[in-house]
Structures are given as structure tokens and as C-alpha cells.
Image 1 (cartoon, one colour):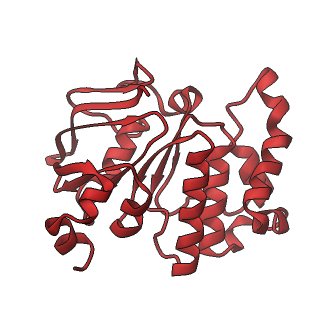
Image 2 (cartoon, rainbow, N blue to C red):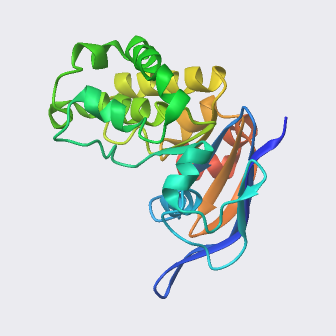
Length: 239
């Protein structure tokens, strides 16, 4: 099992604000790895840096052995790294079907032949989206929009999926449904990096995890061990 993503000594700034302070971590093929931490810890900044939306002042980012530190975001998607952003960010004026088709924009030539088949896989995974395929995405519920955002990312056939706060604003029953989907996607061969404030849910489905505090990785280890860690319990699990 090789390393899919290697983040090495990245430092990211917003003007004078030092948001990520030399963090390093890795994700191996087939894993679900979580980044947990409070608001403002730097989790989303890490995601945006990996996907090319932000640049690190130092260090390197490697995806499947290739240095992507200076690679443009759309090229990173073409390499097989797709992000489901915080807040879903669906195209609200487009239909469900059009949103999903947008997820396949990078697929050209022979790769386009499987688009209809992949749409059916998404509709099989999320029957509600099939029922609402002609509905404008902005009128969907929060949970349905999250399903759509995940489905849109999967249409690019990613080798690795970045998920940023997928449970945000969702009812508990919908949170469980979304997390079931994440584990299913992973079981079918997609590596997952998960950013999540619901630390208990994140750790319950992850292989390993890193704890971010004010731009620094303060703890790392097997997810099961972190679930039993007193420091994690008190800070993030309400224990």
C-alpha cells in the first residue's frame, strides 16, 4: 500500500496571518484519514492548499509521487484529486443532472463514453437525486445538496476525494447517511481525506487521524486510539 498524498512542511499565510505552520502528514492508498480540530484550526486551509486554491510558502505537496505544489487546480482534478468543498457549493441555478454533468468536465475522448454509466451509479447510490434530476439544485435540502456535491466530485472518477465538513448543518439522520456513503465510496477503492468538526463521527470511520490546533498538528495516530485519548475526548468529543 503506497502513499497517495504526502504533505511536507507547508506554511500558508493570509497576509500577515500564519495559518498553517509547517505541517506534515500523509495519506496511504485505500485509507480514510481525518483532519479534526476546532474552527480556525486550519483544516479548510489545508484542503485548499492541497487542491491548489492556496499556495504554501515552503515545503512540498506530492500526489501519487508527482509534485503538485505549483500545479493549477483544474490540472490537479485531472490527475485524480477531487474536492467536495465546505458548504457544498453546488451550481444553484443548474439542475441536479447538469451539476453532475459539470463534474465530468475534465473527461475527454474515450473517457466520456462512461459518463452515462457513471450517472446511473450516482443515481443508484443517491436515489433522491434520481427523483430530482430535473430539479434546480438551489431548491434541494442541505442533505440533498451534500449528496449532489459528492456525486459531482465522483463524476471526475477521482483516485482520492477531499471532503470538507460534509456533516455541516445536517440533521443527525442525514449525517449518518452521508457518512455511510463515504465508507461505501472508500470500500469501492477511493482514498479519502476528511475534514470534519464532528470528531466522533470522523474518527469512527477513519483509519488514522491528525488533530490540528491553530495551524499545528498537535496529535496524530490510529483513529481508534484517538477516540480513547483523554485530551481528544475533552476537547472534541464532549467527554
